[in-house]
Length: 574
Figure 1: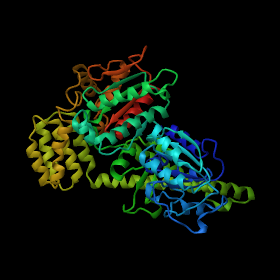
Figure 2: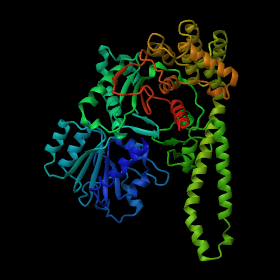
Figure 3: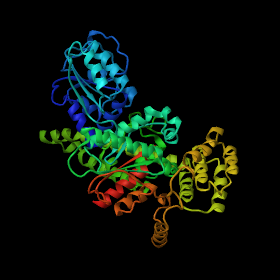
Figure 4: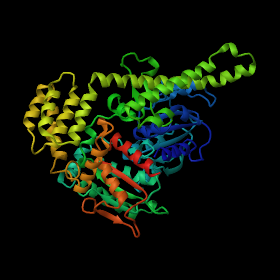
């Protein structure tokens, strides 16, 4: 996913080879996030991009100094950079306040937006009163004939030089983990197949468009499409996508296609409720990881240049350790710090700079040392803040109990410990809510839910949050979800897992839980995923029961735990 988006960005900044020289990059809210996940502000500005602007923000007049020529310094470029409020930040180049500009007829414009009514309206406003000499338009999804006609009718100055589709309508998180960044999808799941589904048509269309874009960006036409049989939403999405593929020649690629498996989050509501212990997942859960940015402002002892940092695949240490657990991470950061200290000691002895060549070598290495210093400081600061939060929030104690609720069936022990945790002032309110939800999901039919909800209220959980217990059971209780979450997995699989656990033991009490997704993926690998639980809507001629490639789309979102497990699975297959 990251490679596909980076390839699109490389082509965008040259207008796909047709827009040379200094230019302006126009984005909307959605494509701003996409581009920022794949490349940095510094890299963009180094590619003859004079400024990057949001097409959906109001245009303001400017003085003559705003129109700077192509030899402008980097600081003047920054003066025009308009992404500070949109989450496009970089560690090397700081975004200033939004710039203002009007006519820049000496520049060309490359626009990359979603093919929506709103974006088309903004583009029409732009080309009806053009500020730039020419426009190169690129869309992140399929552009309908009606929207294309509106654009053509508005182009009275004939300033639009090309219109193309670059299918980047998703955010690449890792190489094998993508997201559509959709919010409030649970209600869409619940309403699927009912009269209330019409209230969520735009969100459903966004999911369908995003999935189509993923397939087109990866250049994959599924040889088979399967869906979660317990989910009306998965069925509808599978059918609509298959219809779109069969009617649109653009999906037809050579070679054997993958299996596309469409799942629904409601089949496994437990995994998102568990505390995480891998680097990327911990940062996301405890600090917030949005568009590769982490805000550390307000944390104790954080220097000003570390108040906002970037974690992306361009960071080699993060790329190599994002799936490392908390213990492994501590060792890796210690090694990173030791290696940096050795390197700086070797290069810091100014007394040894006896020749011009020595001085030149030192100056050549200086930017690299400075960059590495920032990387080391960043990860040490993140690790320190994570360790502080783990201690302050009693997360080790809480997480161990979460794992027991998720993996074992022992009501008398669980209810006793749960009530103790709900009374404990050291356990944070969100953690009390999660424990209450985990208990309700496991003991929906046999537990004392009223007692637990009363204890949650006494423990400081608000009335609205306590009400989420009933909401969760309506969304993903026994009557809603399919088999597989607890004791419903087949007896042989359960016995095998129990036997292996008793023989091998569990190496990490904080990672006993295995997402339902991994049972499904392992069964696909063995050719044993039952059609009764995951039917086909399409099965091509010659499709094998053991496909070489699988694309999993989960309506309602996936977790970083599932992303880590899939990454480990892929690594084991190599």
